[in-house]
Length: 449
Ligand SMILES: NC(=O)c1ccc[n+]([C@@H]2O[C@H](COP(=O)([O-])OP(=O)(O)OC[C@H]3O[C@@H](n4cnc5c(N)ncnc54)[C@H](O)[C@@H]3O)[C@@H](O)[C@H]2O)c1
Image (cartoon, rainbow, N blue to C red):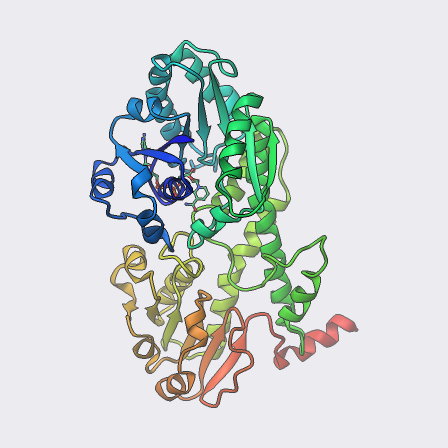
């Protein structure tokens, strides 16, 4: 198929590269001339696992342009993957999508043959029917469903594993104005995925609601696990992993996203949750689960902070290992680690931070208020507390004997993901988030009394 991709950012460039690597001819458009220039030079301007290698296999079929009409004319489907920033009320703004549609409308008017406009950006329910279709019909003078089609086809990828997620999605969500358009996008995925995903075809508004619902449901699972962990911490002998690993075996629950640890962060989950609440309010319903999911999420940093406050001297050096909101990415947006760094710094601790990828992005947020260490051992040196934050696999492979010899005597090791719970420490006092502490004996007695 011939595709155009508008918006060559974190998701858009991966999308363009992925489909081109699977044999489709792709033309990319972005308003950022520098980004387009880099791509013209066959340089990869986005950091994402496997993207550079994927582009190497895709350059023959992937070109870029600064001319949106050309991109539309040279393709059958245009995928729009531009930002939809959240407003103060939590609703996503359609400003950038509408700007693109204003360019696509006239291009549709001058194009012969059927064309599909496929919005991938996350939008508020109702946007396609109430805003996008009327705008395109007005600007093109054509009829949606007859002369062109509109599809809403959001992705469920995670940064750090975007390429893998594209190759093997559980489900492809396709909201379509008409059967022909939905069928074209379905064929695009079936010819590109390496598995046989469930294709969920539905109306535009149902797809818009489904996108938000899926992300909100996942965050609900995460918050359940984290609330359970906070309870387990007060129950001697309890270990949240034993419980979540068991309940995850039940197919009604499923094993993904039930591991307790840090709260959710990143560019999607937090804002999708708030947007869902705004959507419900718009429908005259007060969503009651969402605010609780957010409250539990926000409480995780408070729990970590309290443990450090109780077990490490005031003013001590605290080494935070991991800053990105999850492993495999440099993104620190809504990262629990950055929030904890700020909280500790404000409380007078000397904060040192390490991350395999995210030091530069963290510096843009935390400035000079913390110490950035490229070397994890120098980060831990003389620390009164070491806190394992992002679940980077390399942290469990560190030379922990060496770290024990570098930290202050009896320093706290706070392990958010219990990656080291089987290791015996001598110079570090180990505390795993979600593992019951003896000090809580009284609470247990009062709970069973
Ligand atoms: N990044 C993710 O993990 C992810 C996951 C699921 C959904 N999404 C959704 O995808 C959309 C894009 O997210 P992203 O992370 O790729 O954003 P991004 O900021 O990384 O990239 C957006 C790109 O769009 C370009 N752009 C903006 N306005 C444009 C215009 N008028 N014409 C052409 N190009 C334009 C920008 O220059 C930029 O290159 C958002 O709606 C987001 O919610 C993102």
